Length: 139
Image 1: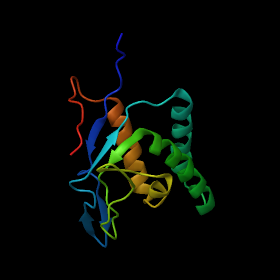
Image 2: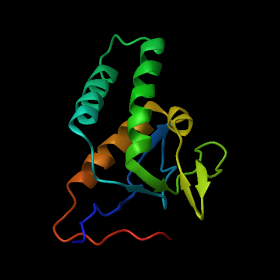
Image 3: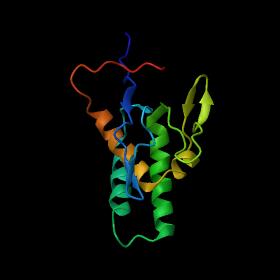
Image 4: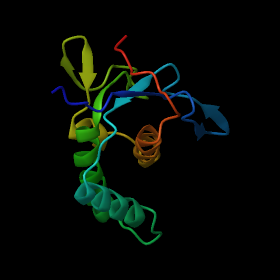
């Protein structure tokens, strides 16, 4: 009997925007993240808790770093690969696996808090794709 596996879900990053000096930029336009739409209950609770703490106003820098470390650990487990580039250097991010780039925990830690929040939201969007989604293919 063949088991069904979760398909990889492609999420385009064109909607990620950041305002810099009054100008709206789209640093990940044309880039994609390929998610594995599965999260254990333990990791879902850990992710939800971490995101809630990150949104608190009284979080200092040291605590923010610990929270991002927790989130990074979870995100690298649910991102199959991506085409993201560094917003400053334009270089591809991640370790190469064949032709694809897979982010490491350090890659996630190099992102802004807004980028990390965007990835988490996109992951949850990948968990609830539209009816009859097409499986993602590498480009």
